[in-house]
Length: 517
Image (tube, rainbow, N blue to C red; front, side):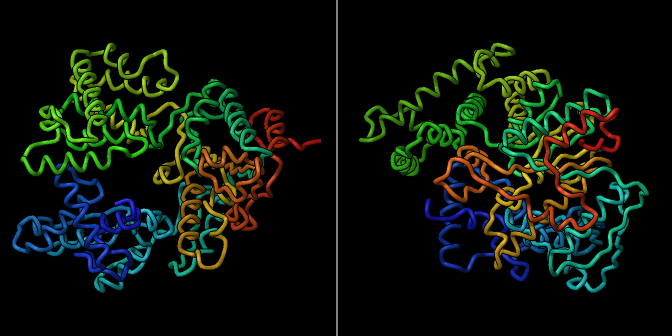
């Protein structure tokens, strides 16, 4: 399993339609067939399903059973964001609408998931040619963004080839305020952007809820939230970042407290305590015993006394879980939160606040588990929030704010790899250009784009900027190629520290900048 790439898993979830020309269906490549058999067996044993295979499984049933009435029960099927559908999802909606009318809406310039889930922009671009009776309505007027922002976005996205040409125009007469800033270091960028936002908020030019902070590297969310909070600006992270192993363990224990037979949770618990993968072979032995005796992993773990050689450490790990499960089941309310996320531990400070919020909404153990999991792993973006929202560029799609800050605009951050600037990397580069296009077009008034000229190697590894010279302690970066592609409407990049000083001298930060003497 270790030798199979994530790319093959993505193709499996797209039911193997890797390109717009391929149809969804059973794999043909021998390695694909082997992978599907292995994964299906693993999921069946663990009684699990992957979230991204739900549509594919449903399509498979409907596709091969044409007499199922559910295929024909819809008069109208309406699909938004069609450009983000992969091959099997496109075929699924066509199955549902084969005796009705299919109405789709989307924008190929906002197609962001070609390399994440094989959702190609050609899907919407070629829709009319695949369906000759299609009636097409194009919307070329933007009500959200001011003139300058629309002109920059239009110039930027024209760099992508093969797209359907459109002349997007703004219906607004104002130009808005656009700035491009370069900071000396990554620390200076995080602290400086937080200072700028604090100036806007503290002088009542903007409310925190009117600001979006968009990250090229989502792992930086907690750093920005901490810096903004330190300046009195309420901020929340809306990016589903990877949780720590300790938090993942507590969520897994909650799952087991609700359902001790949850096979995925049992495997997860054992894996989280297995940093060196020492349990891989023992678990295979355990699985073999389960299949031979027709029992669940929990039953075997609790019944065996004469353990086969090599399973003792795994048994010890399971006993640790059973002890914690007993404690969790005996607690409720604040005592349960104290046990899971002690107030004395700084590592759990954010998770503790989230857990306290979940406790206000759900009182049963199962309800608390479900709500806490959603808040930690799938954070919601509420339009009624009062805090500044920090998130990845991907997460910002569909949102609007008076002020938008896009940070990490450097080659090696956005685009994510400097090698993407070379010939032969066009599809990935174009997708990241579309991502930047989405971020730019979130702003209704203020747009600030910034990047750092220098990042320490340690920080680059931690936040997943490209490390182009590992032997150096400090790495130099250039401002993003995409900034140059904004065209003549874009302002010239300026030293960020000087721009910040000009902001501080304005009677109102939203007024034109005061010249630096």
